[in-house]
Image (cartoon, rainbow, N blue to C red):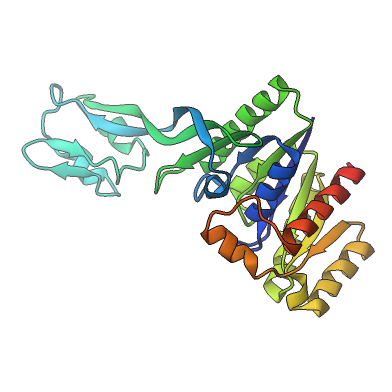
Length: 283
């Protein structure tokens, strides 16, 4: 089994559309590792088979039977998470889990409790299986949730003997992307022919090289600026990066998205399939 991550140095390049189209062509298993803002399910319209809570954070709680009302927890909390009323209580939304109150309480009335920070879903699409998750707004440990999604997707892929596991990563080069890239065999970088697209592509190529992952580059909407598209291709050829194709701008794609008309059809969809075929030939 090959694990292939689809990544982009910035948002809005067409990465998720590329991932979804590849899944419709290839089948097998796909994982949405953009857990902060997942949207792959909108296109794939999956049937949720099971779901479970994700717990990776501890937050404070106050045992009222032990609390003497001294107020020390309220005084030391830098996040104003200890509210004063008839009793001292913790506002879960404000608590950062730093445990300062837990360590300073003279009555040992503070307890650190496991807290649900997100949900993970095991779903089925028309073309295969889909593992995805959603982090609760404002919560942390994104990287741990991404790792859990990947591990579960890998287990499903091994169980059904899938040839390919597609990992749709978050945009950028931050912690969620690093977690998405861990253990993959290749990364398809979807970029666009703009100055920011070129610059962000260079950053994410450096990230792939740091993790010793083979990068492939695809230029989406290449015909909006063919000069920059040529610069991207020239850079790849000069620096040993696999350049696997270009995708034209297709005005029908936004309309198909708005109507949830998926799989996509038209000139852009055909070129995505060709780009994926080029990647598979190299792999």
